[in-house]
Length: 108
Image (cartoon, rainbow, N blue to C red):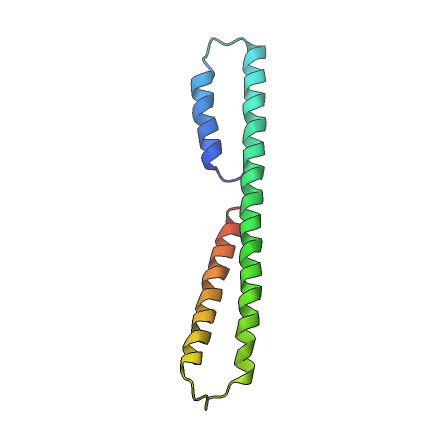
């Protein structure tokens, strides 16, 4: 089974409260089935959210790479030295987005 989500942890707590030992077998099976289906739906919803987050970070990196392409037209003799700091900030932001995207995918 995949990693526990906040929703699945809640479902486990609900299962402990809603499933007293004196339930008849059919009722217990129905309740367990419903809770399992709900847990699966919540896990899929969370996985879709994490996947969308990773895609958002990919799109952000793509946009930042567009700005970073200006580096090709610069030389070490650039008179406005602040442009190098701006480019360094772009690299740093790409790194942060890459880490956040990777973290989202690891949650899948």
